[in-house]
Amino acid sequence: MPIRESEIDALAHALIEGLIAHGQLVLKAPVQDVIACVVELFSDNFEIEAKLDEEAERMAETQARQHPGVDATRLRTLIKQRLAEQKGFTL
Image 1 (cartoon, rainbow, N blue to C red):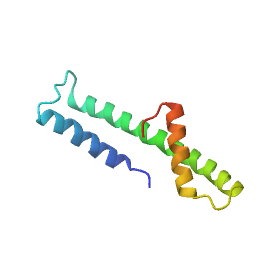
Image 2: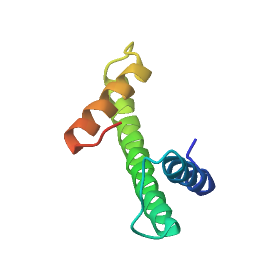
Image 3: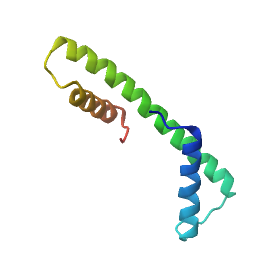
C-alpha cells in the first residue's frame, strides 16, 4: 500500500522537530523550509521504491511463468534487491 502524502508530512515533521528538540540539529534555514525539503526527499524516495516494486513484479511474473514451481515472492524480493543495487538505491 503506498504511503500517503499526509503520512510523509507527519514523518518529516516528527523527524525534524525531534532532532531539534534533542539538540541534534541546528537549522540555518526556517524550520518549514527544512521540513519541505525532507518531505520532497522522502516523496522522491518512496516514488523510486514504488517503481522498483513494479519493475520487480513484472520481471518476477515473467520468470515465474518460464519456471513453474519457483517461489514468486522470494524471486520478486531478490529481483528488487538486485535492481536497487544496480541503480544505487538503498532499500
